[in-house]
Amino acid sequence: MALIVVIGSIGIALLYSAAQAATGTRGRGTLARFVIGLALMIVIALVDVRVWLRVAYPFYGAMLFLLVVVEVMGHIGMARSAGSISVLRGAAVGMMKIALVLAAGKYFHGLSHEDMDIRPSWLRRFLWCWPVGLVLLQPNLGTALLLVLASGAVFFCGGVRWGSF
Image (cartoon, rainbow, N blue to C red):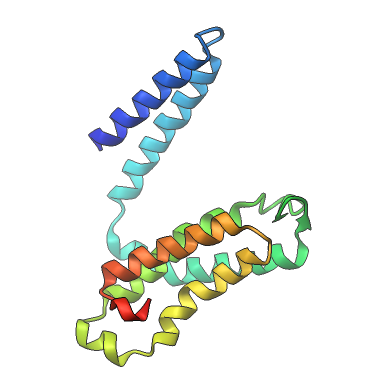
């Protein structure tokens, strides 16, 4: 936590310095967002893990549904977005990063190393293939790569063998 505060403080100081303290509004806005984010991080960390396990799959399903809605109803600019859908405002793709990590974490939470070989690998692939495919259809290669890297990191920490990658 202290490392996050130090890095954030350095970033805000650099931003303030780059603006040459002309108005200071840029630094204050960033500082306000940093403080809000830090408070939100503390609140999320205080929530019991069982709550996150309970909501992981429903949250993943809801975000997957929103990605489908964006694909069907979104408009295409540089990338397909939900800007035309006032309720979504492009949050589906960003929230899918969190949903994918939560769902993959829940999947691996109850598995032993013996179960890892018994469970079909198609289930693990399903977790990341659908969101990545839907994001690639938008087209949004950067976010798709982030989804692959995030799920790959969770899969690696979950004990998936190198050959499975």
